Length: 170
Image (cartoon, rainbow, N blue to C red):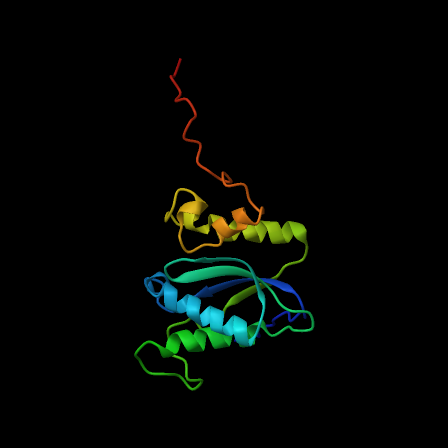
């Protein structure tokens, strides 16, 4: 089995992908209010900055910045997954978690402003990529609109070109 190595950088910024075990489920959006409560509770106990987030049916992507001197994003994910899982029936594993989540999560350390921007764009375009929306602002489980309010995006970013004239073939 491969050895997984995480990059724990105190005060770092990280991109994450977290998946449900059942990739056909819609549990994350069906239980979005509870997921938000779990995340808020985790933020109160173990603060971090949410730079951006998108929740899709069975997976989510986000950018977090940890407080200076703190590198424990794994503990935060463990708390989120455990608290969310406890609300649903089914047998628990040895750590008290229901087998709702994939065992691990994917993490990438953000290297610079260009890398940050690329991952921010990836997060916000994801609902469009998966066919859930025509424009990032249409997906209700995304930080896109908040990022527009903060001036990080123009509201028309990545809008489909609906007003182009059709080709006439002449």
